[in-house]
Amino acid sequence: MEFQFDVNEYFKKPIVEIRNTLLPPDFAGDRRSLWNTVNRVAEIVNEMGEASAHAQGLTKPITTADRLRQSDQTLYFLVDQNANNGFGSVTGMLKVGKKGLYVFDQEGQHYKVNPPCVLDFYVHEKHQRNGLGKQLFEHMLKKENVTPYNLAIDRPSDKFLNFLNKHYNLSSPIKQMNNYVVFEKFFDSSGNDGENEVEQSPSTRSNGLQGASPNYGRYGAPRPPCSMGQIIHNATPVLQKGRETTRAQ
Ligand code: ACO
Image (cartoon, rainbow, N blue to C red; front, side, top):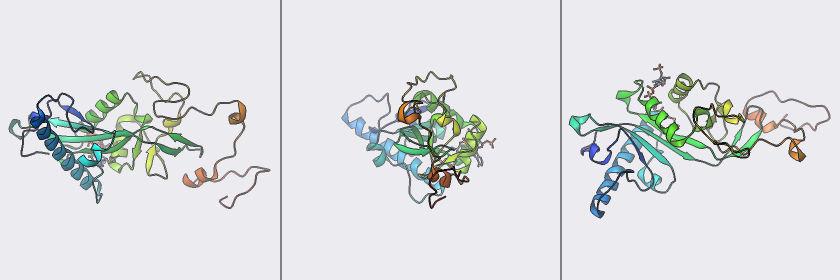
């Protein structure tokens, strides 16, 4: 996406991170240039947010400068520094942030988690399917120190699901009631392929999964299958001898 101003003046690297200050990490300048930069960055955030919403068929953008200001989320912008006669253009945007969620695994077991989430992802129409999305996504994974299956995805589009399948072999998304999607390995206690050095304490993993139930004490006792989880995942409820049958069953 091209702008009426010199994008390279504000975004000096091919991938730039923006947080709630709306200032690029390498910003230096006086108060006047600070306001000027914040206004230009807000314009970029709003335009890219609009374009992303349009591409996803949403009535309202998920990403706006006002919302970013009030959040602890991170926006990664992909910049083509040579485009627009040397003024540069913004070709992609990826927004991530942590969210407190309840998620169900395939067995219907539920967890309270605080994982990094992909909240908005967009590559300009002219540049889709050229590897730019992968470039931006890889950069984010490194910066956030996460693996793709540590992430929860907010209402992924089919294009994004294809993307995850193609580049990261993630298939069979586990759809949640809150419209987020996670993948099977999200629940894996070793949910780390060793490529990045994610330190995982036994109690909280990099996806915020509060440690697996210990196999001792009352948490170690066998649990009945969660009927709500079975309903959500359209699984046939398992009737167990001696257990109370619920209406849902
Ligand atoms: N149809 C089907 N799959 C697609 C399409 C498409 N039109 N575009 C991209 N993909 C998937 C495919 O797996 C494709 O591989 P292929 O071309 O061999 O089939 C792969 O992505 C291409 O990978 P990249 O080139 O690295 O990805 P790209 O630069 O196209 O970026 C993105 C992917 C961000 C999903 C982009 O297609 C896009 O902006 N789409 C429109 C907006 C959107 O759907 N965003 C995700 C919303 S969900 C969310 O934000 C949480």
